[in-house]
Image (cartoon, rainbow, N blue to C red):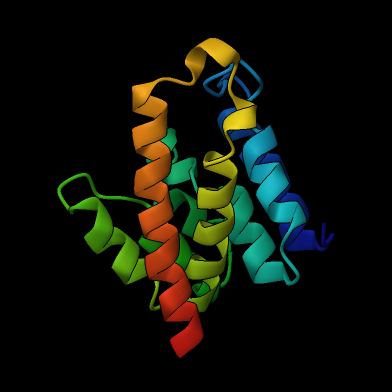
Length: 149
């Protein structure tokens, strides 16, 4: 983890935003963005990883996050990572591929969310397998964009 004034601010916001949430197997949800942030090598990517689900999964808006003074790079990546349900999933993924920070965070997110060992044995069902298949296609799209960058 990169510890700067801004990453510490993002850590606190991430924790507060997700502290009551759990993942599919009942673990504290906040472990997921922490895991992603640990993989990032620069401040903007670490902050984006920490905050990637805040606007989508909590009552905190992108405007609220922007008001905390995070960089334009972070805010642009977060805007792309916040999926508008009216946009088809693969179109959303393609748009992410155009932004290097959003792409890096989304690849880490998809890989972590595709790890079936995170689920309890009874949770590995057709729905989980279909989700992993969809994520594999998204990873392929983003890796193609990475090669072109």
